[in-house]
Image (tube, rainbow, N blue to C red; front, side, top):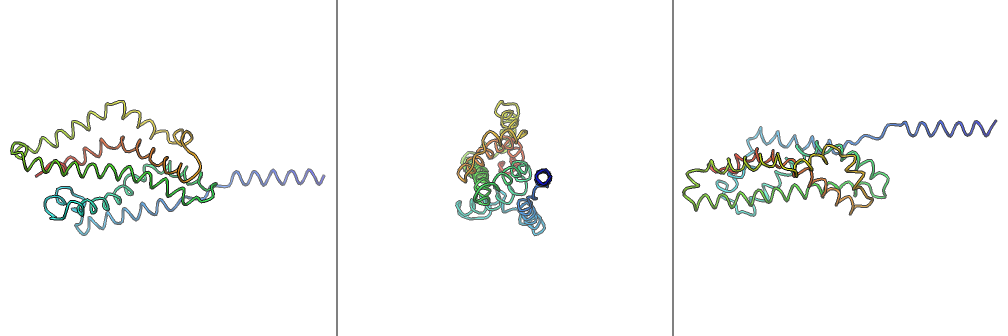
Length: 222
């Protein structure tokens, strides 16, 4: 009888442990709220020009490198506020899986760092590309008089991407984060870094079209 009761108690304890809700993942949401707070403060205080390509390159009179640093700082806030929420399903899986590792916070930070590197590289490419467009406009009178061509070409490229096989392949990865996670997740901070890079690459190329459309007004010179 005693053995039977002990077995029943163990089964009940196992049932409680498996049915116990997982601990909430709060710190990513706190980071997102902080980013949105900074963005709203920038709007209220009329500081949004700090992420405007045209202002930084033409009106701020800052050295190109300094303008790039200012732009990237603002870009990180925008990425956390706008892109991190859409990656929360992947972030939830990473946080819960990392809790079984020796240094869970390091693993989580490595994943976010890899994700951020991809978006930062995209921002650098966009900024430097815009720098070259500004120089081309200043040296080519026809383009200066027809600067609308820049926005039209940007929209055409973004629209063409919408119908490309690459976009569909990346979108599939973003719509099914669980299968993506199961396929590529490995233990260790190095593996988390690579997973962040891979996830950022897939999500970045899907969102690039929309970002290009939204950024066409910044690429077009006045």
